Length: 117
Image (tube, rainbow, N blue to C red; front, side, top):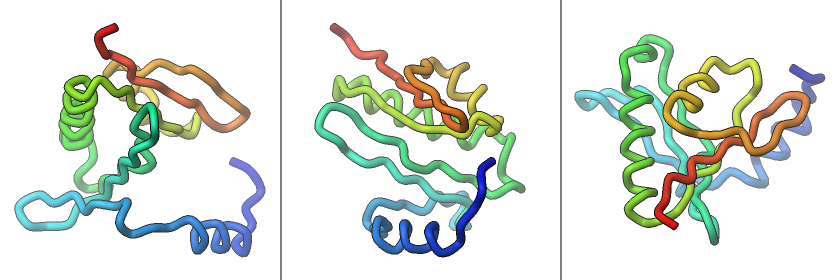
């Protein structure tokens, strides 16, 4: 996607990683992925939703997203996320009602704002 710098990436994650922001996704007591939803002042930021390849395309990610969306709607708070343009999950987010609000060369910033005005 862009030139990768191992040292810069490691330094970024060492400075910004907080294990309290992550939850392990389990199916039948087996760890199958990770979720990070970070509360901001005016929205929730979906920082990470990853499901192991062997559990993808089984509606797990969709069900997790739908649950997060229902919770966000109940709290009257939108959800924001950032996704690589080449990530096939973009189509899932779009199908579920996330809208692209910004983009750069490699990312889409998407917003789920299905809240009552």
